[in-house]
Image: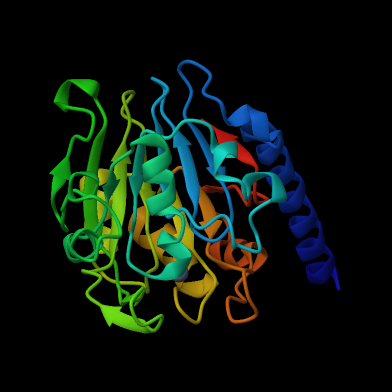
Length: 287
Ligand SMILES: [Zn+2]
């Protein structure tokens, strides 16, 4: 009985602390996504779509699936609502990660960095102009704004697949094309803040290596299960392998298969030095 009460009190306290952290770190006003000088902001737009604004005001969008994403708030289903976009990163070729990338790239003349095989398919199939789809691969480091700009992107391994389903305009039929290898990204910003967008992935041992080498401040971690890690594996990866200061769960709740929840993730994480920010779609966390 006492133990049960203690557990209830612990849960209530954890809930309160969590809400306080959210209030301190995450705003909810969509307009807040506009950079405040010196701050890093991260806006979750549903599934794995993230808008990162750097301290210098560069806007990096990862895995933009917005116009048909059921979790994207209505006001962001119009691509214009994102404001300017300087760079787009794609983790792999699946529709729920690439859907709006060609249109966003054309709208802003923003390059799309993607796994090499996917960039090749984009260029050879005419989905995007070749100069807007630079090739890139795992372990590689790129400076998309030049080395002096202070923004560095490193492609990491991800344990997933990357088939590219392409509708042939001549036949109207879907065809399967090369989509390269699935990846995650370490995004290091001008002030040294490091964000690890893990892409879609199952757990793998080299997350420990990634944690030791790159020491991410913030991880964007898939928790939905079925196609990606379940909450328990995501919690293990967070606590034992990556040890970031902050974690934002993603890739859950979009459909019935992606059934993992932030509560399950936080319960599995238990006492931890990592602060979990379970954002509502459209909300912005500021660091
Ligand atoms: Zn996915």
